[in-house]
Amino acid sequence: MTSQQPETQPNTRPPSGGRVVMDDVAIRRALMRIAHEILERCEDLEHLYLVAIPNGGVPLARQLAANFKQIADVDVVVGILDTTLYRDDLKIKAERPRLRETEMPSAVDDRIVILVDDVLKTGRTIRAAMDALMDFGRPSSVQVVGLVDRGHRELPIKLDYVGKNVPTQPDEEVRMSGSDGNLDGALEVVVMPGEPESSGGTR
Amino acid sequence: MIGRDLLGTEDLDRADIERILETAEHMREIGRRAIKKVPTLRGRTIVNLFFESSTRTKSSFEIAGKRLSADVINFAASSSSLKKSESILDTARNLDAMDPDAVVVRHAVAGVPKQIADVLSAPVINAGDGAHEHPTQALLDLLTVRREKGRIDGLTIAIIGDILHSRVARSNIYAFRKMGAEVRVAGPPQMIPAAIETLGVKAFTSLREAIDGVDVVMALRIQNERLTGTYLPSVREYSATYGIDREKLKFAKDDAIVMHPGPVNRGVELSHDLTDHRPGVILDQVRNGVAIRMAVLYLLSGRPQDGDPRVDLGSGEEK
Image: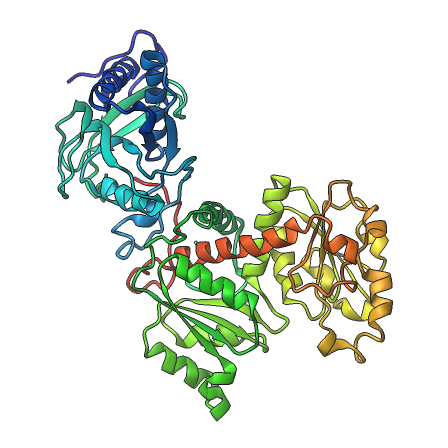
């Protein structure tokens, strides 16, 4: 796959050495398709609850909520759930990862929770997210949206909704970012070549 | 990069303080959940080693440890072998043999937490040593002020009371100065240390001058039981001159907040009407205390690299 400049975002350019695998237009189309897929599978729209894993999941979940509003005129709650304190590598790491926001505006009991993350790799983040979720209550079901599935699973976790499958090398880094440095504007997913001494992601 | 231990705010730099405050902001959210517990320190043992009586600081550390799923064990001086004349260092060595993952120490003598840290392999957190430091109290005060005012840089803080004997004052002076605040202290002349200006604060004996235009008034507890007669001729006189009431508070900024490390001697450091005026701030200090202690326990629980006793907090950014 070669890098491509989205026509609507002339300022977007891939960081040096990275290749863009999804640009803003592709991300928006994928989220619209995924919104339709979710609506198709979930009959009980009132019970939907989008739970974003920060940071990348947050703009994606908000866009999904906007899509639900547009397609079916339903207001779906968006929560944010940081998984850091539930990680399974805290005992072995020297460095303490920075915590991120958790904001769960309503109870998860009897809700259909849709976890939203940007890049899926090992599945360990989703494992942590499920444990965290159970501390907030008992959802009637949990499903997972991943914008990019790059493979290399280490746990028996599968995605229910996938934006795009992107085969990668384990040491490559896949990152969703805003072209202007924040996640509010145009988004893109970039694959960066692995560094010789890369510690490897745990996503 | 902060040390392996947390012995005082004097040892922290601004980036360390920012990191602790930011982490504590996120820890606050756990206290609002139905299940107030995360598995982060599961299987770790935290020892509360309190040689001096304390209810709220000890409970605060205990709750903080338990919310992170650590096992918390309380050693009180009255029930320990110190009554059987074991030396402090022997107690510490025996404790070390039980392989704790963190030890929280309070002692009436300055420097004891440092002595214990020197023989322990686990991180030591100072929960108050004599008139030296009480770092987690200062950190929770910073968090409270920042949440109330939105910033610390550029604010003016007046600390009122017995500055000489106060570890809370000392830790707060270091911490607020490092975060860019102006710090004033005021109290009876015999309670202001001689060289206090070397810490970068302005000393006053007039309360009115000290709180003129300040953003934060922090009243320290007068330790009645210890001071009356020697340092303080009369509590009533102290209260009339240095007790904060609505009338005196008029000299501070209109939106000034009143803080107190607790427990409040009602009618001495704070007038009755003030204790009940926005009591939320003082209770928020307590709430923030749990969050700060969770943050400190989390940040110091990193596994040190071989040969390097210091924990690299780093930026915490994911790669």
